[in-house]
Image (cartoon, rainbow, N blue to C red; front, side):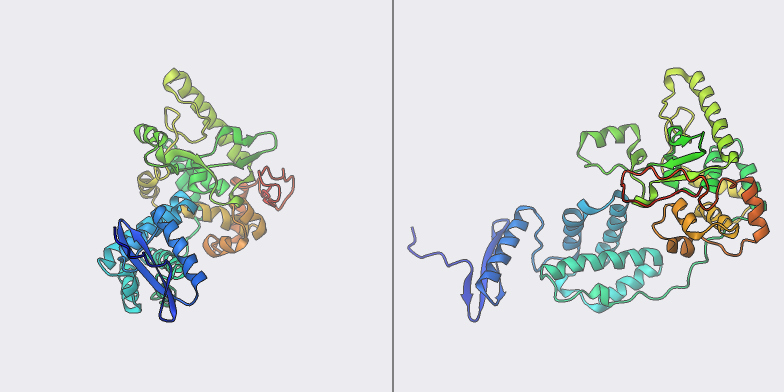
Length: 405
């Protein structure tokens, strides 16, 4: 056995301190630390990251770093749909960066990345910039890079998309009439008259309604279950096609809210309840009663984007432009705004924490006052600035969510 002593770890090399560590059995060194305590702390952190499979070597490719950062560092803190967005961004970046090393990432490369993605989707480019910025924040914190290039490079300015347009009085009548007898009838009515998000709409249940007080409470969304793909529950949901039909929390804490309903909406929901009761009686045990207001013929819930193709056909049938589904939500907000309802009350009803998002993304101020009053009379009469407010039912007692009622 050799008498040669193993060098101290860390050890001084010139005027700085260096330490060694092992990754997959291979010895690596890292130096440049001014003091021994700094080197010891860095050594312990790297060794812990190696154990957790979170360590990224200094000569790692961008693709390796981004994948490890997303799956091991960022994913545990992300909601499922946010994770899917980040995963899509990482996929685009890995394809673009190829074999480029992380430490070789420069301003020119990032500029080309942004320009490339902007060429086919400015919205994806915006997400990529946010994703890369966060990833390089972590790289900077771990001293893998010297600066965060992603934040220093600006996106090429793109022409602004036209604002989402609210439907006119005539268009509301046309789309409702065209949807009668189709699977989109209740989704259209609910979206126009309650202003709920798609995922919230699919998740509405009869038990959420207080018919006496004319209030419906938004308690959940339907969406992808955030499950480990190796888990038994995931396999079961995958087998029965319910991975994207899980009951999950509302998009934000403000999304958990009560909304007052007009007599029009209540009557339509009661009629829907009768239709479902008839189907339940007809199908017997084959009907899966889960209490959903909007459901398939056998009682099962719809998936998040089940409306997409039927909605395109509905617009064509009604002779309407290619309106985004959010135009229905925008119609709800715009009509109430033009009818004199305060922006704060509208934003609360829509599940926004502030009225800034409501103004920026949903209000169409071109809606005529007379049109607003006509529509409010027919569909939205249950909404005022606070009269008969039933008060919030919220798991967070500090929440100040209110209903428009």
